[in-house]
Amino acid sequence: MRVAPGVLGPMLVANMALLTVAGPSIGILASTFIDLFDLAKSQIGLLNAGYAVIGAAVSPFTGRLADRIGGRNMMTVGFLIAAAVFILFGSAPGYPILLAAA
Image (cartoon, rainbow, N blue to C red; front, side):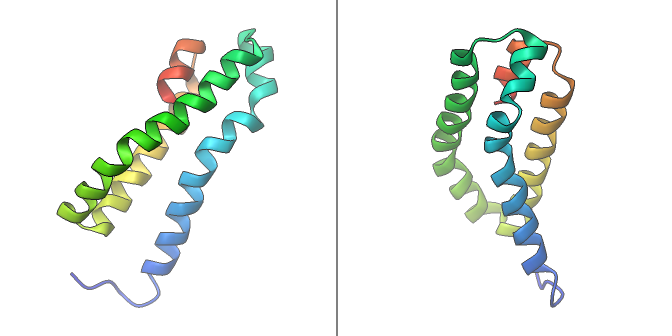
């Protein structure tokens, strides 16, 4: 499958930017989460740790999946997962949903 010139680069940049923002957004929004959900700082730490642990755990599987379905399709999957995470973060009624989204 051929990609039109000038399309793949911006798609890669957008994918990396979107996926890079997901983890740090927990720290950026920490004070909001603490105030809104009455959380302890240790619970914010658990959100950060959950994001890192899940990312490390699924990396080998997503790498194999990217080899199987192609990098472009895997980028689409990455965009969809990141969108779902941001929707869950934005609409979370409480800490358990935040933890599930992380």
